[in-house]
Length: 266
Image (cartoon, one colour):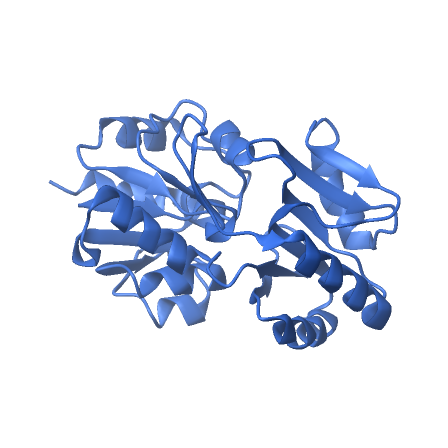
């Protein structure tokens, strides 16, 4: 048996904190606990400081599976040739550049952005001023291993970009940003989403899907629902997520919904 939770707007509070109650429940929980998040290894482990992380982590929307010590178990990345093609063709047609998370050398994570930024990218990058991974690139090019490429902007523009980039045979996720007044479009390897990440976790831990419980709130969580025996949505989840859930919790992420549920597991 294993329990896997999304982070933003699901397990984390809206100010990105973890309550002392949640820390206590997590650290005392008798069954395996893990995460499935759009965040990177560094971003996740920094926010979860104080939690006893013992099991493989599903990171970057499922593009990477890593142990809590950072050792990589599996990556599904867009290669440099395809990444460069997407960057060039999208910019030529829509005048937009993505933010890129990935590696040139495995284990040395980079976060690249172009000098040409829209207002939403500028707002997001304010949160990364002291992050050593973040590199400003004059002539943006793909990395050797591109775990995720993210466009930020208005919904209608991103819908057109999404329709265009699907012609490259990639996985896409378009959803409302949980913290800013915009949408984001994530471009991933076809096997780089949370659904495939959860499947890898089940294989690594030799666990049947019927023994997996997942928690989520947003569109990028829906995929992993199909690989779980029990699907749980927090009270503040999107309606599309609630429709696919077995259980809708009576509490929001700001009310420690996930850990209140876990505390009742015997």
